[in-house]
Every structure is written in structure tokens, then in C-alpha cells.
Length: 285
Image 1 (cartoon, rainbow, N blue to C red):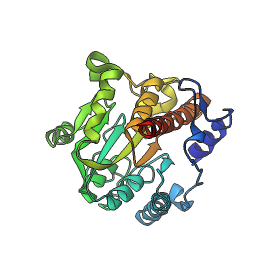
Image 2 (cartoon, one colour; image 1 turned 180 degrees about the horizontal axis):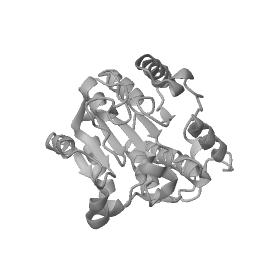
Image 3 (cartoon, helix red, strand yellow; image 1 turned 90 degrees about the vertical axis):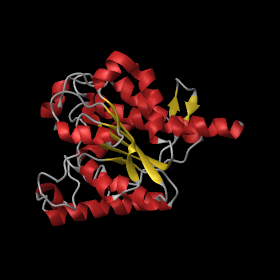
Image 4 (cartoon, rainbow, N blue to C red; image 1 turned 60 degrees about the vertical axis):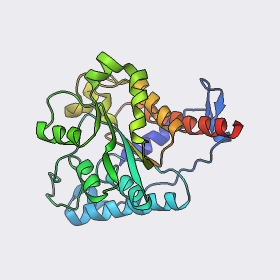
């Protein structure tokens, strides 16, 4: 619950929306509104029963739908699933006639068949939200999923092999470091856009692991070696902004570090700069 507040607090540090690298005052080109917090029932945070989790999910989906009704792009700063992931992806899918692509940054696949805590098939929890999103929303297709960042010995081989067999484009950190680099990785984002009518972008910030702007151990048990750097995460955000997106979400924001919260501010602002740059280019012809 503290993550959105901490990100807001760190955003006050910045004088304006002017990004010097692009010589761009972002808010001169885009209308951006802080729509406040979703009315998540407080009891859902301390008693995550099936009923409470579904109430929390509904509260976030209602808020996301308000934003989509306005023709805007929802950017949801969350901390866990389903409220910070599934709750953004499903409303986008429900409103999209065609297929939906996804760009996902994460240390974990979150593709178990059932939520480990509730074992309820309706809930896409922290280890299962991706599986449930694709199960419940068939216009999310593995062929249009760009999965970035996972590494190490954390996952069930059958789950990963099934997703790859079904067409998922998987870019583990080993491949990013040894073959692609950030430029090559950016060139792979097109898979989320080919044959789709919408794109959902999800950043699980534990992807920073031990390579982010703060010590890896700040993440506790979520920290893993070979993590993404802050620049890589911010660069991908900018590139998806350039290409277009219909919604964005964050979970697992590492706690207790001002510079990590600032990283979220950068991710959002550099994504918006990407949106603005493309719109300006199109307007110029």
C-alpha cells in the first residue's frame, strides 16, 4: 500500500516534466492525471480470503475501466497480484475486439495453474496471474507475449516449455547479456504488436535483482543475480511508449530506497516521452 505514496513523494523532487535528454516538456504534449488510489478494502491486506481478494480485484478493475472509458492509458502502481497485474490486463482484453499483445518484465513467470494461497480458480495470484489472464481472456495469445528477464533455477521446466511451445518469445537475462544487449532486445518488442489491436505492458520490478539502482538484497528473497539494470528497464519503457500501449502496471516495487522509487518515476515519464515523441513525429508527417 505504501508504494504509490512513496512514488508520488519522490516525483515531487522533479522541477517539471522537462526531460533534458529529449529536450521535451512532456506535459506540453500529453494530458496526465493522477486519478488517485483504488478503493481496495483494508481487510483484504490482512485477511486475503477469496471474498476479500475478489473485492480488491473488482475495485481496481472499476478504476481501470474509468480510465479506459475516458480514452486514456491507465498506469497502475501496485505491489501484488491480482490487483497490480490481472486487474489491468483483463479490462483491456474485454474491450479489445482483436488480439492483445503483452510486454512483461519479471524475475518469475507467475504462470502456475492455481493461486498458491487460495487455490481458487478465479484468482490470478502472485504465482499464477499470467496463467489466469491467458486462460480467462483468450485474446491474450502466447504468440504475442514478449517475456523478459527471468533467470536461474526458480521455475518448473514443464511450465516454461509449454509457454515457449505455444509461441511465447522468451528473453532470459543470459540471452540479453550474451547475445542481444539492450539494442537487440528492443528490436524484439515487435512480437507484441504484430497482429494485435492492443498491448498491455507489465513491469514486475523484482526484475532489477542485484543489478538495479539499489543493493539486490533490498528485495530479500526476491533478489536474483543477473538482474536488469535501471537503464534497461527505463529504456524498454521508453520504447514501448514509442510503439504505443493501452495500459501499464507495476508490482513488487523494492521497498525502502528512494532511488528505486525514483526509478519508477523515470519509467513512467520516459514511457510518456516515447508516446509524445511518436505523436509529434506523426503530426509532422
